Image (cartoon, rainbow over all chains, first blue to last red; front, side, top):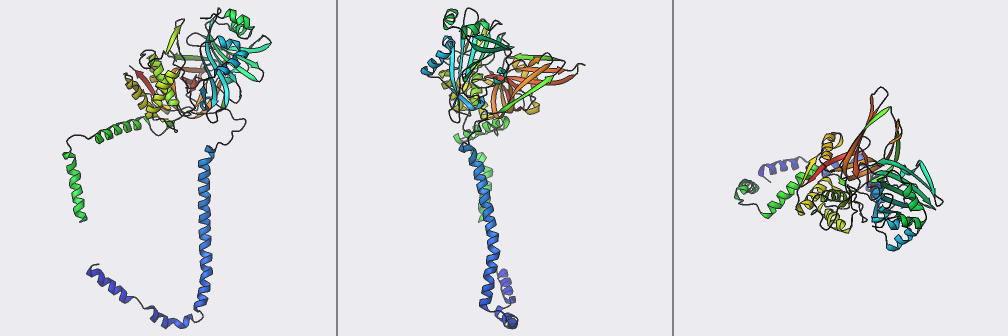
Length: 239
Length: 288
């Protein structure tokens, strides 16, 4: 502290009035108060002032923290999806089928066994590994035509692949081996292939077939795929 | 004392640059990071792409007197690769693999020990993906694109793809086509004409199946699947539909990009540009 500052400090201290002198002059004005009464009046004043100020703040902080925590953690705790919610392709991954799984499907759909250059997958939900559908892709070389085939056997109808809506109300129908089959050509691809959709209801499961062929008709394929197993064997050219 | 130290620091700051003879390894790393940061600023590093979620369907009917359809597609199409492991955030890796698989048709050293496709009756068809492609391309891109639980940023996607292609002894070039309303449709058409696929970084979009829209001679029906979230796809064509009334007035125009989605089942579709779809970035990819 410099000398100048010390001088100022001394002057300020000198000008400060002594409390005892001041109290002596004004004592009679405080005659109605004594020390114990003042103490009693202080306590409730403190209690009334501080607690209401403290508890609302504490409660507000608690509520805010709870809100933040709930917002942060609720989505990750895996709240069950509503039963009517749909699953899209962005939420699934594809794993390969085991030989046993393939064999069991070939019993019901023998033409799948005759596909060449195949790729087969289970479509499963990433979040819980639930099996939604089985997808077979492959090619069928027959005496009629060369077919590029994608078959989707859907086990959970909440799974929505992009073309699924197009299968509703397909215009043409055929009955093969007592199975009702609906089909329709949806486009001609830039490569010049005819693109058909075919839907086959088989018990509780639905088979969705997307097929591309060089020729315009798909009836030969329907007879081959869903006719007697013997006819399929004779019509398919094994390469 | 404080003034003395401040003065010394000032002198050091002025003199230091003249004392350096050659850049240290640390300087080189910093320079490299600066370059990558520059690319991140250029290509956008804020938005991570990690696939998208299906929100529901919407059907729309369009009545018209007559219409015109203009469709352009890369004749070789693109491969239809997809995620085969339970990873929800790999759309950028799959899109990169599709681009690599597309060019592997021309430069077969891009994916060693992998046959990308074959001709059937003079039409090119891609082979399905196998473990070679999954292990050597998709997994490599997962690492090189710095993909994590949040997904992949646009900059990391481009840098990772570039790193992978360079490591295979090939060169890669990108041409930006803009974003949002400034998306360069003419540039896109030129890319398709040049047989170059385009990486599309979309944020919330409508996707339609590759099917004809008309249900009668004067009515189209659009089956829109609505998705939210950020997703990377590969565009390989476009379709522009113009609708006219009886007085030959243009009443509506719909613009679609033909895309490989990176999904197994719905492997391709029409991305509807003029309805909900947000384009955060688009890059023409050339490999030579």
